[in-house]
Picture 1 (cartoon, rainbow, N blue to C red):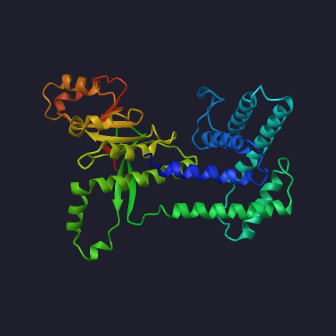
Picture 2: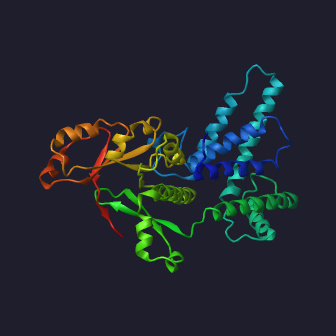
Picture 3: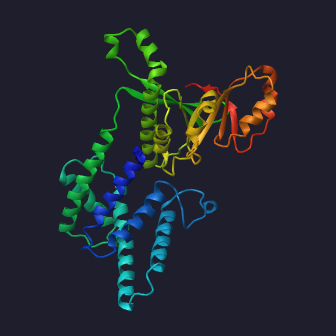
Length: 360
């Protein structure tokens, strides 16, 4: 069973929201939803995930509206080209007109989606905001009071649902902090923070710290951490902020089933974050649980290894280099005399750095 992560749940919700706006403009026309969904998915992939079909990556120096418009134009041409040529001329003409209509009205959905409703609460607030937005884009649609009223009710309902979605994600007990690795300005370790003021009334801080850091709750801490990272990354995606590489400690002592590890890792299947969330696996954990990683080759892992007591260092590095599942190797400890050897060792398809942080 596929369990959808927070980011994927949100964008599935957003697809349905954008489709709902277009239903006002279409009278159950056959294939309308199919074409509309194609344009909506292109918009989401382009604007939020920066996945481009029409542009080559090398052409894009910085994301802007022109890129999104060109991607939607590319989708329009693709849909026109895919019309069944065995249809009658009349039916082909109908399908072409429908695609053009869906293309045009997809821009209205996008404009509605990108409008700021932060200060809208009453129906009149939404009405005034939408009226202004639609007047500014009158070349796309003829504005009427009836249309604005219908859209205002629908937008208010959808914004209310979105606010409830984010309210349900709120966590007053836990938070996360990021600390960059000293050897890399784009790699950050994720630390789980907690607020336990209420518990401190009944337990000493020493008892709480002991239990919080005990192995038996490591799984619960991992779940809390991954949920908070998903929420933070979702907010970054929605604001088109830069996404660095975020490293999450993933202790395996309480993950005995392959399905459980897969559920945790696949929470980050979203294309914008899949390559930016890295799970740190202890060397001994990996050696004892290699079978857990069989179906997870498309995700990112880092091997945490202590080389302090390693005798045949070159052989150990060769062994580590042979583990294709890992994109990163983090050295947790090393003898001073071996530092130069490790520094000069060239890993194949792996980035190697020390487990040292810039604490803020």
